[in-house]
Image (cartoon, rainbow, N blue to C red; front, side, top):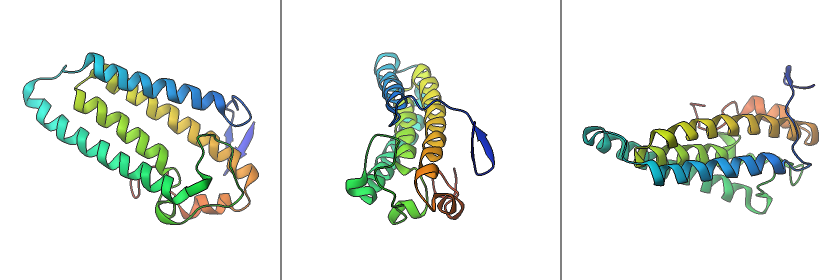
Amino acid sequence: MRTVSGRSVSLPDLGPRGEGWVAVQTALIVAVLSSAALTGGSWSHEARAATIALGAILVLVGVAEFALGAVALGPRFSIWMAPVTSQIVETGIYGRVRHPICGGQVLIGFGVALVAASWPALALATAYAALVALKGHHEEVMIERRVPGYAAYRRRVPHVWLPGIV
């Protein structure tokens, strides 16, 4: 059992760099996208206009958030959970949220499900968000163990995915 910020945590590492977490995350986002493509059109015509508009906004915001996170990380960007360096990035969007790339991915998943009007894709997007939340929590455990000052960064930047919201 590890503790992070006073909370007990017991999640498996699934590889030294979190390879198993990344594999499950990848499989689940592929399932979201495939399900949207194969099961779309489930909602009435009246609801479609609203869900297409909301879904498109979520996709655009998600892509922007992902891109801002990737640009801020620069060469430190990695798909693996283990930190690449011991330097904390606090510039750009990382001054507002701790995991913008993950937040962007979640928004894209929900947006695609809404645009497609797919209940199965929406359910899978919800599962994807839960997995990414668990993975992000586990990643923070790894980072806090290896990067001095990360606990203080967590206190300064309380939002995980979206500024002022989550």
